Image (cartoon, rainbow, N blue to C red; front, side, top):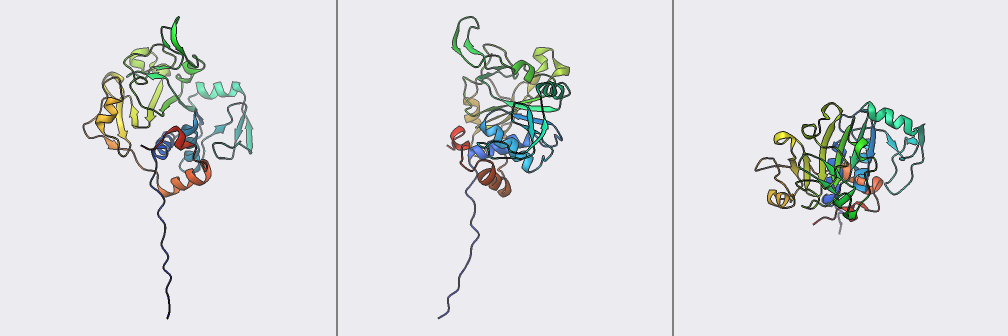
Length: 259
C-alpha cells in the first residue's frame, strides 16, 4: 500500500502588540533618506533596525558614543562593523541641519506635545525625581522628534505637564521654524498633532484597541474620527526579521506585553 506525504506551509504566529509597535516606529523613518536615527529604548531600537533592514537602508545608526556602524545587530548585541568616526561635534551639526530623528520616552506629555522627564510635582519640591532635563530641550528643536510610550495611561497623557523639558507644538512655544514634532507611538495606537490648534489626534489604533479604551487612557480629549484607522500589522518578512535577527530573545514582549 502506498502512502503519500503532504506538506503544509506553517503560518507564523500572529503579530504581538510589541511587534505592531515596532512596525509603527519603523514607519516613522519612511522616506527619511540618509539621516541619523536616535531611538531611545528597546522597542524604538527594534523599530529603527527594522526600518534599516527593509525600507530605509540609508539610515545611520550609532552606538550613542562616537561611532557609526554598518551592521544591524540584535538589540541586545554590540555593533561590530564601524563605518565612521562620529564625535559629538558631528552630532550637533546633524541636529542643526535637521538630519536626525530622535524617538524619546516621556513621563508626561500634554495635548500640545510638551514633554516632562524631570520630576513629578512642583519643580522645587517634587514628589518624585526622574531623569532630569538632560538633552530633552535640544532633542526637540531643529530636527524631527517622536515619542514612544509603552504604557498609555492618564498619568502620562496629562492636561498640563508639571515641568516642560521637551518643547511642544509651535502654537504654544513660539518655536515654529525650529520645530518638527512628528508622532507618538504607544501600546494603544499612533498619534500626531493634527488636532485643533495643534493638539494630539488619533492616527490609528492598534488591532483590538477600541476608541473608548484609548480615550479612557488619556487625560485630555483626543481629536480624531469616530472610526479611527487600524495600525498596520507587520508583514511576514518584517516579522521574520524581528523574531530571528533583531530581537531573537523576545525582549520586546517584556516592554509591551500583548493583552
